[in-house]
Image (cartoon, rainbow, N blue to C red; front, side, top):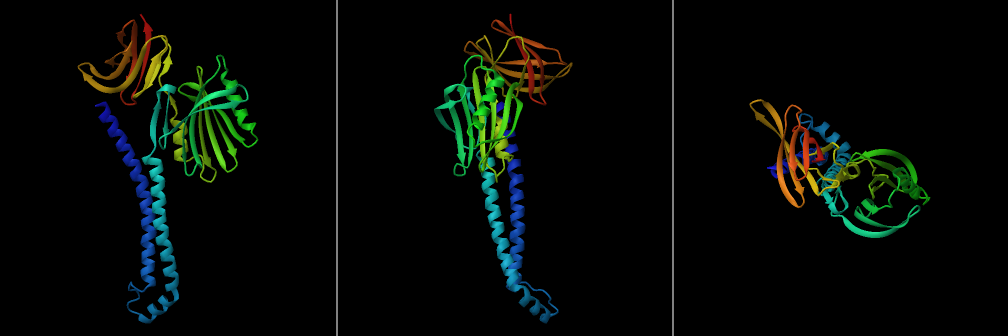
Length: 338
């Protein structure tokens, strides 16, 4: 049921979005082609008008026929080109984009095509040469570039110092002009977002240092295309950490399908879904989880009734469900050692 529900929601959302865009493209194209064909028919005297005054019709036609034919062909060509351009953009934005999970690097992100994987050694001002693991996609003859890079940093590297050093490494090239530099939050972690002007291109970058892992999310697009289009924003905002280790005794907020690992244990928890259930005492949320503990996997159900916590014991640990919301598909749990 979970797969079927997810597939149905995804297909419905995709079809609705695709249909809105397709109908918009088709409307503009159809109007242009329709008016163009009408003008061409008038220009070739194929449509009757001024039926009661043949002399007036002949004079009007001789005066405007060349212009009508010209404008008619222009509108028809415009309508056809508009349709194919919209269809091409629609295909790039709607049919190809897909979420990719890179579990070995603990992150997921949306790419417009199968990403290219690379391992490179890259110099940085503060740390010398680093081994960088990249996943990237180039489109439009390399004019559009989307990449996530990952590397291990030395223990004790400060978040602010690390972010500042990377921003400076871009500015040091002399080719990149900083447009803005601001703090953001990704997965409840302090992160940084910056924007640079680089010749005819705009670069957006997001930086996230989590434990000893540094992530860089970079999108490069032509200035005339704009960096605030759907594709760029989707790429930048889709980056999420996965399999993040959470501490014992600390509330863990989870969303539909999210998986977390518990620090200091051999336990991971995936939140499958929350359903509205009914009983003699009223409605409640039935939360479904998959627990992996010491290699053994099992599915458990926990009830959220009027804010009252539900508890389950898994091995030497107690899982407490603080709440589950079937409407928002979210929940909060705490894991404690017994």
